Image 1 (spheres, rainbow, N blue to C red):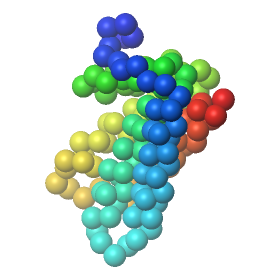
Image 2 (image 1 turned 120 degrees about the horizontal axis):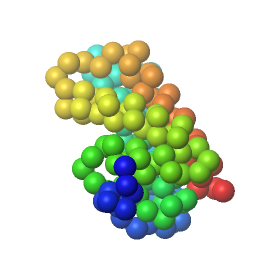
Image 3 (image 1 turned 90 degrees about the horizontal axis):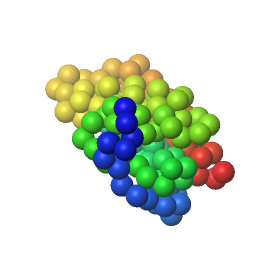
Length: 138
């Protein structure tokens, strides 16, 4: 994918720090919701929060390292932009891609997300947020 043709938005270190803080909070709340077994809808809520965490973490890493973030409608564009972040971009892009593949089910689906699937998603989001933190703090 040609990054020059993808839709991006300029951003800076402050934006990176803000998005990183949001990613961390999304992960924190996702873990709390996932641990609460009082409602069968909680895994779906945790999965939705994991997707939001992954997007925020991606923005943080891209703003810190590239001074731009993906703003197009295509999830593939966001993954492609993130992949160019050195040194962890390809690994981060893999986790973001996994999360975005499950976005529709977790955000808009009518079927419940299993606890196992939600747990995987929270793990991916947490790992993505940790790598984004390294990018922002570098």
